Length: 335
Image (cartoon, rainbow, N blue to C red; front, side):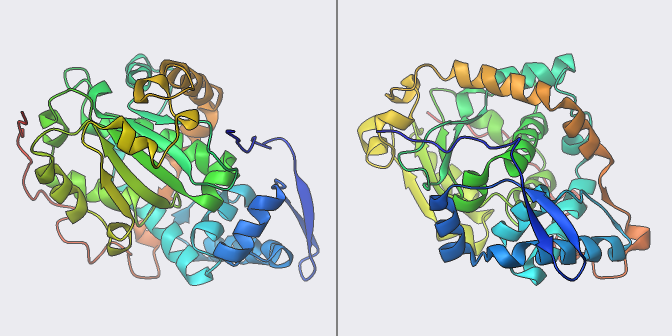
Protein backbone atom coordinates (compact mmCIF):
# COMPACT_ATOMS: atom_id res chain seq x y z
CA UNK A 1 0.00 0.00 0.00
CA UNK A 2 1.34 3.43 -0.90
CA UNK A 3 1.83 5.98 1.81
CA UNK A 4 2.98 9.54 1.91
CA UNK A 5 3.82 12.10 4.55
CA UNK A 6 1.39 14.99 4.36
CA UNK A 7 2.78 18.51 4.48
CA UNK A 8 2.36 20.20 7.85
CA UNK A 9 3.07 23.67 6.51
CA UNK A 10 0.73 25.56 8.82
CA UNK A 11 1.58 23.77 12.05
CA UNK A 12 4.44 24.86 14.29
CA UNK A 13 5.90 24.00 17.61
CA UNK A 14 8.06 26.18 19.80
CA UNK A 15 11.43 25.21 21.18
CA UNK A 16 13.10 27.44 23.77
CA UNK A 17 16.66 28.66 23.33
CA UNK A 18 17.78 28.78 26.95
CA UNK A 19 20.72 31.13 26.54
CA UNK A 20 19.00 33.61 24.24
CA UNK A 21 15.52 33.20 25.79
CA UNK A 22 14.02 33.04 22.32
CA UNK A 23 11.47 30.78 20.69
CA UNK A 24 11.64 29.28 17.21
CA UNK A 25 8.83 28.09 14.98
CA UNK A 26 9.34 24.89 13.00
CA UNK A 27 6.98 22.15 11.88
CA UNK A 28 6.54 18.97 13.89
CA UNK A 29 7.39 15.79 12.00
CA UNK A 30 6.08 12.20 12.26
CA UNK A 31 7.90 9.76 14.52
CA UNK A 32 9.32 7.82 11.57
CA UNK A 33 11.03 10.98 10.30
CA UNK A 34 12.23 11.86 13.80
CA UNK A 35 13.94 8.46 13.99
CA UNK A 36 15.44 8.85 10.53
CA UNK A 37 16.72 12.34 11.32
CA UNK A 38 18.25 11.15 14.60
CA UNK A 39 19.86 8.01 13.16
CA UNK A 40 21.08 9.29 9.79
CA UNK A 41 21.40 13.06 10.22
CA UNK A 42 22.52 13.18 13.88
CA UNK A 43 19.59 15.43 14.73
CA UNK A 44 19.04 16.14 18.42
CA UNK A 45 15.77 17.95 18.97
CA UNK A 46 17.11 19.64 22.10
CA UNK A 47 19.97 21.22 20.11
CA UNK A 48 18.07 22.48 17.06
CA UNK A 49 17.07 25.89 18.44
CA UNK A 50 20.61 26.71 19.53
CA UNK A 51 22.06 25.52 16.21
CA UNK A 52 19.64 27.70 14.24
CA UNK A 53 20.51 30.73 16.35
CA UNK A 54 24.21 30.10 15.68
CA UNK A 55 23.58 30.00 11.91
CA UNK A 56 21.60 33.25 11.98
CA UNK A 57 24.32 34.96 14.01
CA UNK A 58 26.97 33.78 11.54
CA UNK A 59 24.93 35.02 8.55
CA UNK A 60 24.46 38.45 10.15
CA UNK A 61 28.16 38.71 10.90
CA UNK A 62 29.31 37.45 7.48
CA UNK A 63 28.68 40.87 5.96
CA UNK A 64 28.33 39.61 2.37
CA UNK A 65 25.38 37.18 2.47
CA UNK A 66 21.85 38.45 1.79
CA UNK A 67 19.92 35.36 2.81
CA UNK A 68 16.78 34.10 4.44
CA UNK A 69 16.69 33.91 8.22
CA UNK A 70 13.54 31.79 8.59
CA UNK A 71 14.18 28.84 10.90
CA UNK A 72 12.33 26.33 8.72
CA UNK A 73 14.45 27.30 5.71
CA UNK A 74 17.72 27.07 7.66
CA UNK A 75 16.70 23.76 9.22
CA UNK A 76 16.81 22.28 5.71
CA UNK A 77 20.50 23.14 5.50
CA UNK A 78 21.17 21.70 8.95
CA UNK A 79 19.59 18.43 7.89
CA UNK A 80 21.33 18.40 4.53
CA UNK A 81 24.69 18.82 6.27
CA UNK A 82 23.91 16.33 9.05
CA UNK A 83 24.07 19.13 11.62
CA UNK A 84 27.72 19.95 10.93
CA UNK A 85 27.97 23.68 11.51
CA UNK A 86 31.03 24.11 9.28
CA UNK A 87 29.37 22.28 6.40
CA UNK A 88 26.23 24.40 6.83
CA UNK A 89 28.29 27.60 6.55
CA UNK A 90 30.08 26.33 3.46
CA UNK A 91 26.86 25.18 1.76
CA UNK A 92 24.94 28.37 2.54
CA UNK A 93 27.82 30.49 1.22
CA UNK A 94 28.03 28.37 -1.94
CA UNK A 95 24.22 28.39 -2.28
CA UNK A 96 24.05 32.18 -2.40
CA UNK A 97 27.34 32.68 -4.28
CA UNK A 98 26.46 30.43 -7.22
CA UNK A 99 22.99 31.96 -7.45
CA UNK A 100 24.58 35.38 -7.78
CA UNK A 101 26.50 34.33 -10.91
CA UNK A 102 23.49 32.69 -12.61
CA UNK A 103 21.17 35.61 -13.44
CA UNK A 104 19.72 33.68 -16.39
CA UNK A 105 18.38 31.19 -13.84
CA UNK A 106 17.79 33.24 -10.70
CA UNK A 107 16.14 36.33 -12.19
CA UNK A 108 12.64 36.83 -13.67
CA UNK A 109 11.12 33.96 -11.66
CA UNK A 110 7.55 35.18 -11.76
CA UNK A 111 5.32 32.11 -12.35
CA UNK A 112 2.65 34.39 -13.84
CA UNK A 113 5.02 35.70 -16.51
CA UNK A 114 3.65 34.24 -19.79
CA UNK A 115 7.00 32.81 -20.88
CA UNK A 116 7.91 31.36 -17.48
CA UNK A 117 4.44 29.87 -17.19
CA UNK A 118 4.82 28.21 -20.58
CA UNK A 119 8.05 26.57 -19.38
CA UNK A 120 6.33 25.44 -16.17
CA UNK A 121 3.51 23.92 -18.21
CA UNK A 122 5.98 21.79 -20.17
CA UNK A 123 6.37 19.72 -17.02
CA UNK A 124 10.02 18.79 -17.42
CA UNK A 125 10.51 18.52 -13.63
CA UNK A 126 7.68 16.80 -11.78
CA UNK A 127 7.83 15.87 -8.06
CA UNK A 128 5.72 12.75 -7.51
CA UNK A 129 3.46 12.71 -4.42
CA UNK A 130 3.86 9.19 -3.04
CA UNK A 131 6.47 6.74 -1.78
CA UNK A 132 6.04 3.16 -0.62
CA UNK A 133 7.14 4.01 2.92
CA UNK A 134 6.82 7.41 4.60
CA UNK A 135 10.58 7.53 5.21
CA UNK A 136 11.68 6.58 1.69
CA UNK A 137 13.39 9.16 -0.54
CA UNK A 138 10.91 11.32 -2.43
CA UNK A 139 10.71 10.77 -6.19
CA UNK A 140 11.45 13.45 -8.78
CA UNK A 141 10.50 12.71 -12.39
CA UNK A 142 12.51 14.55 -15.07
CA UNK A 143 11.03 14.22 -18.56
CA UNK A 144 13.57 14.88 -21.28
CA UNK A 145 11.07 14.63 -24.10
CA UNK A 146 8.90 17.34 -22.50
CA UNK A 147 11.69 19.86 -23.14
CA UNK A 148 10.83 21.77 -26.32
CA UNK A 149 14.09 23.35 -27.45
CA UNK A 150 12.23 25.50 -29.98
CA UNK A 151 10.37 27.26 -27.16
CA UNK A 152 13.04 27.71 -24.50
CA UNK A 153 16.65 27.00 -23.58
CA UNK A 154 18.17 24.84 -20.87
CA UNK A 155 18.63 27.77 -18.42
CA UNK A 156 14.85 28.31 -18.57
CA UNK A 157 14.27 24.68 -17.60
CA UNK A 158 16.78 25.01 -14.77
CA UNK A 159 15.00 28.18 -13.59
CA UNK A 160 11.75 26.24 -13.07
CA UNK A 161 13.70 23.37 -11.51
CA UNK A 162 15.12 25.74 -8.88
CA UNK A 163 11.71 27.32 -8.28
CA UNK A 164 10.29 23.90 -7.47
CA UNK A 165 13.35 23.08 -5.38
CA UNK A 166 12.93 26.27 -3.32
CA UNK A 167 9.39 25.24 -2.37
CA UNK A 168 10.42 21.66 -1.56
CA UNK A 169 13.26 22.94 0.63
CA UNK A 170 10.84 25.02 2.64
CA UNK A 171 7.82 22.69 2.76
CA UNK A 172 8.76 19.02 2.36
CA UNK A 173 10.23 17.44 5.50
CA UNK A 174 10.36 13.97 3.97
CA UNK A 175 12.46 15.33 1.11
CA UNK A 176 14.86 17.14 3.44
CA UNK A 177 15.32 14.20 5.80
CA UNK A 178 15.16 11.25 3.39
CA UNK A 179 16.54 12.80 0.21
CA UNK A 180 15.32 12.35 -3.35
CA UNK A 181 15.61 9.75 -6.09
CA UNK A 182 15.47 10.98 -9.68
CA UNK A 183 13.79 9.13 -12.53
CA UNK A 184 15.07 10.65 -15.78
CA UNK A 185 12.80 9.71 -18.67
CA UNK A 186 14.41 10.55 -22.00
CA UNK A 187 11.28 9.46 -23.86
CA UNK A 188 11.41 9.19 -27.63
CA UNK A 189 12.95 12.55 -28.36
CA UNK A 190 16.32 13.31 -29.84
CA UNK A 191 18.51 14.18 -26.86
CA UNK A 192 20.71 16.49 -28.89
CA UNK A 193 19.14 19.78 -27.84
CA UNK A 194 19.84 18.94 -24.19
CA UNK A 195 23.53 19.57 -24.80
CA UNK A 196 23.44 22.67 -26.96
CA UNK A 197 24.68 25.12 -24.34
CA UNK A 198 27.84 26.66 -23.01
CA UNK A 199 30.12 24.41 -20.98
CA UNK A 200 30.73 27.19 -18.46
CA UNK A 201 27.00 27.35 -17.79
CA UNK A 202 26.85 23.58 -17.46
CA UNK A 203 29.56 23.71 -14.81
CA UNK A 204 27.71 26.40 -12.87
CA UNK A 205 24.51 24.38 -13.09
CA UNK A 206 26.22 21.27 -11.72
CA UNK A 207 27.53 23.26 -8.73
CA UNK A 208 24.09 24.75 -8.16
CA UNK A 209 22.48 21.31 -8.10
CA UNK A 210 25.15 19.50 -6.07
CA UNK A 211 27.54 21.47 -3.84
CA UNK A 212 25.08 24.32 -3.29
CA UNK A 213 21.79 22.45 -3.07
CA UNK A 214 20.52 21.13 0.27
CA UNK A 215 18.36 18.60 -1.61
CA UNK A 216 20.27 15.32 -1.19
CA UNK A 217 20.39 12.85 -4.08
CA UNK A 218 19.81 9.18 -3.33
CA UNK A 219 19.91 7.74 -6.84
CA UNK A 220 19.50 8.32 -10.57
CA UNK A 221 17.39 6.07 -12.77
CA UNK A 222 17.32 6.52 -16.55
CA UNK A 223 14.49 5.12 -18.64
CA UNK A 224 13.76 5.13 -22.40
CA UNK A 225 17.39 5.77 -23.18
CA UNK A 226 18.76 6.08 -26.75
CA UNK A 227 21.24 3.58 -28.19
CA UNK A 228 24.25 5.83 -27.69
CA UNK A 229 23.29 6.71 -24.14
CA UNK A 230 26.74 5.82 -22.80
CA UNK A 231 27.98 9.16 -24.23
CA UNK A 232 25.36 11.06 -22.25
CA UNK A 233 25.98 9.00 -19.13
CA UNK A 234 29.73 9.65 -19.24
CA UNK A 235 29.13 13.41 -19.51
CA UNK A 236 26.59 13.17 -16.69
CA UNK A 237 29.02 11.30 -14.42
CA UNK A 238 31.86 13.67 -15.28
CA UNK A 239 29.87 16.57 -13.85
CA UNK A 240 29.02 14.73 -10.65
CA UNK A 241 30.75 15.14 -7.33
CA UNK A 242 32.61 12.05 -6.14
CA UNK A 243 29.89 11.53 -3.54
CA UNK A 244 27.10 11.50 -6.12
CA UNK A 245 29.03 9.16 -8.43
CA UNK A 246 28.81 6.60 -5.64
CA UNK A 247 25.02 6.85 -5.57
CA UNK A 248 22.84 4.34 -7.37
CA UNK A 249 22.96 5.07 -11.11
CA UNK A 250 20.86 2.70 -13.20
CA UNK A 251 20.05 2.73 -16.90
CA UNK A 252 16.85 0.74 -17.48
CA UNK A 253 16.90 1.05 -21.27
CA UNK A 254 13.27 0.87 -22.32
CA UNK A 255 12.31 -1.71 -19.69
CA UNK A 256 9.52 -0.64 -17.37
CA UNK A 257 9.81 -4.03 -15.71
CA UNK A 258 13.36 -3.12 -14.69
CA UNK A 259 12.21 0.28 -13.38
CA UNK A 260 9.43 -1.35 -11.35
CA UNK A 261 11.97 -3.39 -9.41
CA UNK A 262 13.04 -0.11 -7.81
CA UNK A 263 9.76 1.84 -8.01
CA UNK A 264 6.51 -0.16 -7.82
CA UNK A 265 3.51 0.82 -9.91
CA UNK A 266 1.79 2.32 -6.85
CA UNK A 267 4.18 5.30 -6.82
CA UNK A 268 4.46 5.94 -10.58
CA UNK A 269 2.28 7.78 -13.12
CA UNK A 270 0.52 5.98 -15.93
CA UNK A 271 3.19 6.97 -18.47
CA UNK A 272 5.67 4.78 -16.57
CA UNK A 273 3.25 1.90 -16.16
CA UNK A 274 2.06 3.18 -12.80
CA UNK A 275 -1.22 3.55 -10.94
CA UNK A 276 -1.14 7.28 -10.06
CA UNK A 277 -2.90 8.43 -13.20
CA UNK A 278 -1.52 10.75 -15.89
CA UNK A 279 1.50 12.86 -15.05
CA UNK A 280 -0.27 15.97 -16.32
CA UNK A 281 -2.27 16.22 -13.10
CA UNK A 282 0.97 16.68 -11.13
CA UNK A 283 2.26 19.21 -13.66
CA UNK A 284 -0.98 21.19 -13.16
CA UNK A 285 -0.76 20.92 -9.37
CA UNK A 286 2.79 22.25 -9.35
CA UNK A 287 1.89 25.08 -11.72
CA UNK A 288 -0.72 26.21 -9.20
CA UNK A 289 1.64 25.69 -6.26
CA UNK A 290 4.26 27.93 -7.87
CA UNK A 291 1.63 30.58 -8.55
CA UNK A 292 0.48 30.37 -4.93
CA UNK A 293 4.09 30.99 -3.85
CA UNK A 294 4.71 33.80 -6.34
CA UNK A 295 5.75 36.38 -3.73
CA UNK A 296 8.22 33.99 -2.10
CA UNK A 297 9.82 33.10 -5.43
CA UNK A 298 10.17 36.71 -6.55
CA UNK A 299 11.73 37.60 -3.20
CA UNK A 300 14.52 35.13 -3.95
CA UNK A 301 15.75 37.43 -6.74
CA UNK A 302 17.01 39.95 -4.19
CA UNK A 303 19.07 37.36 -2.28
CA UNK A 304 22.68 36.47 -2.94
CA UNK A 305 26.12 37.81 -2.00
CA UNK A 306 27.92 41.14 -2.05
CA UNK A 307 31.50 40.20 -2.94
CA UNK A 308 32.72 43.68 -2.02
CA UNK A 309 31.81 43.00 1.62
CA UNK A 310 33.17 39.46 1.79
CA UNK A 311 35.65 38.81 4.59
CA UNK A 312 36.33 35.15 3.85
CA UNK A 313 37.39 33.17 0.75
CA UNK A 314 34.92 32.83 -2.08
CA UNK A 315 33.92 29.13 -1.99
CA UNK A 316 33.92 29.02 -5.81
CA UNK A 317 37.30 30.66 -6.29
CA UNK A 318 39.00 27.38 -7.19
CA UNK A 319 36.37 26.30 -9.70
CA UNK A 320 38.08 26.38 -13.11
CA UNK A 321 36.26 28.10 -15.98
CA UNK A 322 33.37 29.02 -13.71
CA UNK A 323 33.23 32.64 -14.76
CA UNK A 324 34.57 32.25 -18.29
CA UNK A 325 33.54 30.55 -21.48
CA UNK A 326 35.11 27.18 -21.93
CA UNK A 327 33.36 26.02 -25.05
CA UNK A 328 29.98 24.73 -26.06
CA UNK A 329 28.40 21.32 -26.39
CA UNK A 330 27.19 21.17 -29.97
CA UNK A 331 24.17 19.14 -30.83
CA UNK A 332 24.61 15.43 -30.26
CA UNK A 333 22.42 13.23 -32.37
CA UNK A 334 21.30 9.81 -31.17
CA UNK A 335 19.52 7.10 -33.09
